[in-house]
Length: 105
Image (tube, helix red, strand yellow):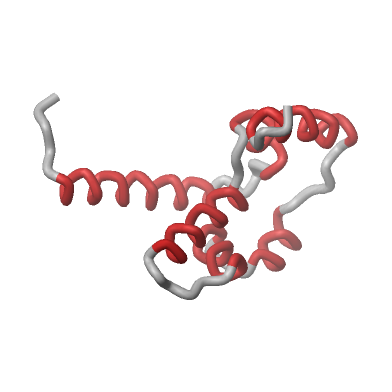
């Protein structure tokens, strides 16, 4: 691949990010715990990374602000509409996968 300038790279990364966020908003059937167990990150992780990026740029953004950007609505609303109770199996797998992806295992 030919090299690209920084601005083009940033624009492509931003477009991919927007598509990822749109995909997460559409796939409300996919539970955060399942994403954590399979991929090691979820919508909440993405929200934390977004807030951290804003902070790094000197912007004042709360975790709740970032979650509303990622979820497309207040988190409590999303949770009430779409989040299901995690099974004992999902929670057990989460303990294992979270330790691997977050430096505890």
